[in-house]
Image (cartoon, rainbow, N blue to C red; front, side, top):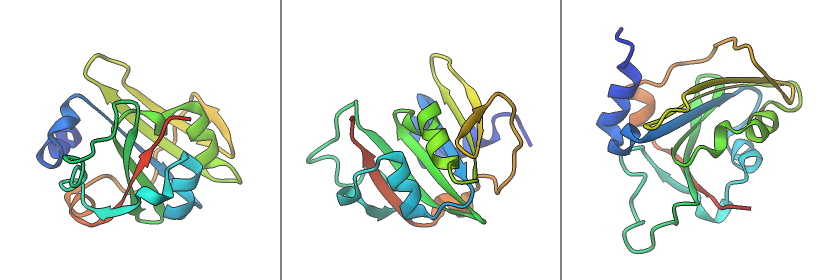
Length: 153
């Protein structure tokens, strides 16, 4: 496995991944609850794959300040992939996703730097990381999940 395997895989599904991308796995959270904890707008819920995540935005594109996130199951964990913005790896989001005795693991990178691996347990963000859960693979990227918009507060 090459160090750029995930990046290369994501580029085949979403060319914008070259500019930035983040993902969070959350334990003990279902996908609808994950959306709520991330502050997603439930009225924007749309079933799609990563390849189709921009469908419908040509007529009414979200602003640059609006996050676009795809949420689905990944084994026993919920997984959120954000293709616009990096709200889901903020300390507040990580704390919210891990609240109530769960864990959250986040990764992110940006073309201008700021790459990170984040870990939170029971609402507390930690500088250490214990990676678990299923990796992002072609099967997950090909499956339909739910897209949401994260509107600025």
